[in-house]
Amino acid sequence: MRVDYDQLEQQIAALSHGETDEVALMATLACEIHHADDRFDWTGFYRVTGPELLKIGPYQGGHGCLVIPFSKGVCGAAARTRETQLVPDVDAFPGHIACSSSTRSEIVLPVFGQGGRLIGVLDIDSNQPDAFTPEDAARLGRILAATFAGV
Image (cartoon, rainbow, N blue to C red):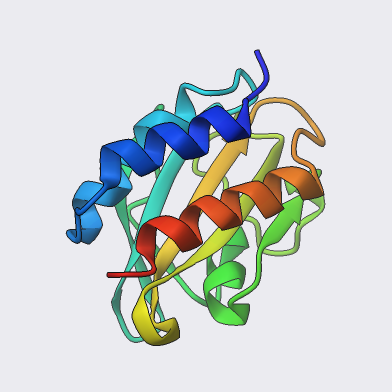
């Protein structure tokens, strides 16, 4: 099953309408995104909880890493650079943190609130190599921007 981004956007907009709590929004998005596509093996958020520090937030899938500094891994790179990281082969990514041995590819998008404040990152892992596309990056980015713009 491949994600129908138009339907996913509408569903998330309806479910999150009027909500401003970051964790509630993250929980809703993690669930909806995770179950929208067979490629998505682990879907979750890491929240900015201190200077240069991410901690696990709401997620779907097996366990995740609890703490990730901005200086480590794909999630850290997305937070540090404030840019989406599209990684076709996690083994080829310098400093990749292996939270799960089944992960083969990954996409991580920064999540911004009002005024460009970095709230955290959305991390999606796949047990398939090269699972993510620039379209995934663009459409997921659009969903994040629409959902968290007022937070």
